[in-house]
Amino acid sequence: MSPYKSNAELWEEKTGRRVAEDISDKPYVKYGKEAEKYLRALFAMDFPQYQVDYDEFGMIRNNSDCPFAFATLDGALTERETGRRGILEIKTTEILRAGQWDEWNGRIPQHYYIQVIHQLLATGYSFAWLKAQIKYTDKDGMKQAAIRHYLIERSEEVKTDIQWLAEREKVFWDCVVNDKRPALILPEI
Image 1 (cartoon, rainbow, N blue to C red):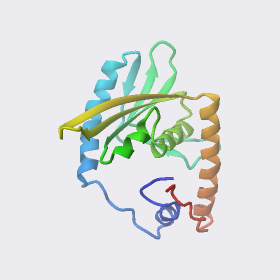
Image 2: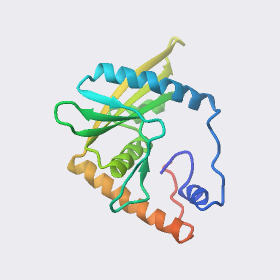
Image 3: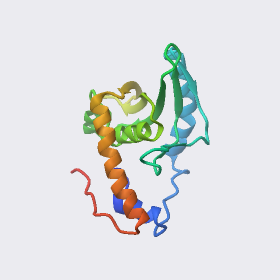
Image 4: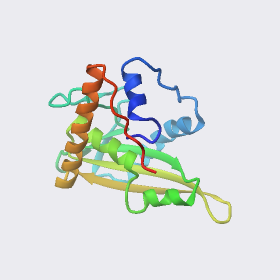
């Protein structure tokens, strides 16, 4: 459900038919990678009720009904008072068209939300925070940045979304395991 590649292209990568594009040298990827440590530190300062940990090479795997589900986290959170575990997901993005603000208006863009619920599926954690740095040019031509924070609790609604995603991931992974091209999911227009 990525806006950057189709499910069929992902299947081709997972089955060795296509090599994933290396985007590590792209300026926006380099910026996001470098900014992440500072944004993580700011989150820790702004939300002292959480212990924020980071393991650059750490990977968490769902060992129950979705053993193919892995997550690498921008931060692992522990609520100091209760010990509940959570996810910190950090995004840096730039608004290039006015309509892009609509994706952030009181919500998280769909592809970021799906990433977060996949991480909740993989980790089994109780909640996630998404911290977004959104760069834009104001009406006077000045560069600006807005910071947004979104809390996603593992509520009944979110559990339903996680289950929905798990079912689709199982179907997709079955296609990988059985070397069967999945039906193409078209992006929203």
